Image (cartoon, rainbow, N blue to C red; front, side, top):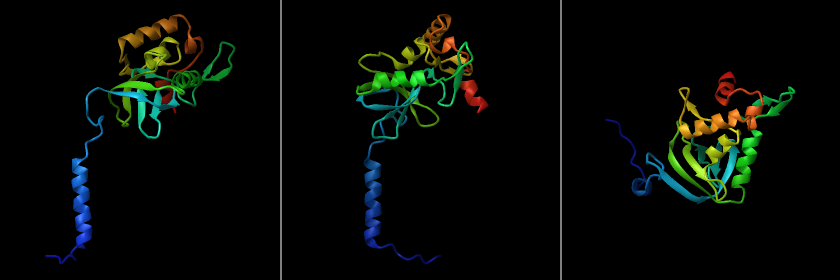
Length: 179
């Protein structure tokens, strides 16, 4: 048997107290929980489909939408390159700047981001609005849109050449694969 030196009593007491406190603290509301609401929150726009809680590193990925990446270009009919993500980012900043936001959190993704349907006092569903304006696409999982409503909004925007649909561009998931 190894002779290990005894821990100082103050260290042992501190460690025991820390373990007891940690055991009594509730887990975050979103840790494995079902849907829940985040009401009246302040957010920052990270990109065309992601928000961050102000004062936190917690990200909220907008459910059902896939926006262009920051480095992604699209081309006008005249062949001019334009940034593909800027319109979605600008719209989200307009809808969230100096406004309180509410999100219905549905789950978390594999990166630990909350997946939610978010709104402000002027926009009822950021994802739906981005897609309807042609600023982003309906998110697909295994080549199928995760929301029939969002897929329908995308088809309408596409048929009316709104936003991205008047440009030549790669779908965001194709662009990511090519990086």
